[in-house]
Amino acid sequence: MAKRTPPTVFLTGATGAIGSRVLEHYLQRGSEVLVLVRPRERQSSAERIAALLDAAKLPAEPRRRAHVVEGSIEEPHCGLGRLERERVIGAADLFIHSAAVTHLGAGAEECHRANVLGTENALELARLCQSSGRLRRFAYLSSYAASGTARSGFFAEDSLPAKPAFANHYERTKYQAEQRVREELAAGMPVVIFRPSVTVGDTKTGRIASFNLFYQAVRIFGSGMLSHWPDLRQRKVNIVPVDYVARAIRRGLEVAWALGRTFHLVSRNGCLLKDLFDLVKAFPHLRIPKLVPMAQWSLHLLSHKEQAIHRALETYLLPYLNDLRLETRNAERLLALPVINPTFLRRVLEYAVKAGYLPAEIFGPLSRGVGTTVAG
Ligand SMILES: NC(=O)c1ccc[n+]([C@@H]2O[C@H](COP(=O)([O-])OP(=O)(O)OC[C@H]3O[C@@H](n4cnc5c(N)ncnc54)[C@H](OP(=O)(O)O)[C@@H]3O)[C@@H](O)[C@H]2O)c1
Figure: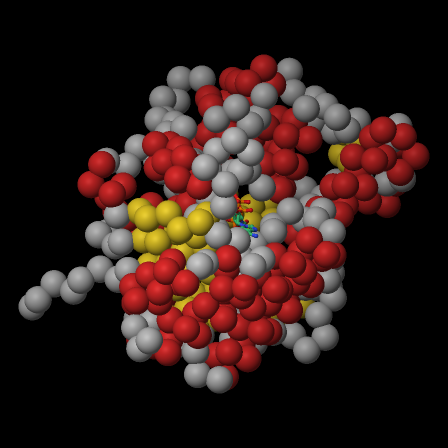
């Protein structure tokens, strides 16, 4: 049987935690990938991508197939001039829209501009790609939180709830953006939607390009910044390895039956807070907060400074300790769901220590004698 030519991909958000892994994944499998990137601080767009591919230790041959296209999703046609636009339209078999403002404390305006208007601009460019007859799929990176985490409940894969309750502007704008994508699907765009849960490091190495709320919460809990915390050890946060997310996206864009479907890219079991605390607690010099039974919990147990930290955790972390029931029928048909275990958790924390995100003087012993390779 003749080997199929790998698809050419147009990717937004390639400098992000998920986007960078998607970029690597397609490059390693022979694709040409056009990446929409903007310069940042003193780094050009090309330098940013080169730094990411260095960190991934990607050999010269696949690296040559990464092509930087400078732009911003906040501009019409993603900021591409006519020539660049024609280049993308003439080449893209797959359009993967991963760029977004993901910081849970981001304001309404910032989230609206990047997540809602940014998605509309991506869809506008995708329509041009579609009209050229080349585009096979438009992949949208939504989130399991787009259904609104401020209320417990059952979240279906192929629809959004009619009356969601949002915990922050990120969730609200991801919901609105997914609605726009669904309208486009109804109008004939070949859409596939992916909703990952809280995405953490690689299954084998723990590697990830940036550190989200999971890591931020671990940093706070292990650093002794809080003397007390309510005992929520039986709550879970659904985390998922980044390499699984990238594999599932590629598979979802390959199989015919996935067209028009939505996938909850989540782990089978999530992470019980108890397991995380047990892991961190194994190191006697860590100052884990004293856990107070819910019935006795009071903010007055905390100093003023601690109360501010606690409020931030309530805003950013508590919504994700919600007892959400997520449908995974589509996702399970695509690939087996990953399972989170203490060895994996340990690897994820070890990488964050080696990458300098978790302070070595506090978390250092986690990585003693393990010998995992850290790429970047
Ligand atoms: N990571 C998770 O836990 C998670 C979970 C569920 C869903 N998701 C969704 O998955 C997608 C990828 O997430 P991620 O974790 O990779 O995000 P991330 O690490 O925060 O990266 C966000 C990416 O979006 C880009 N971006 C933001 N505004 C842009 C603009 N105006 N123009 C061009 N690029 C822009 C960023 O570029 P700069 O580097 O230039 O800022 C970066 O590449 C997002 O849509 C997110 O909502 C993520």
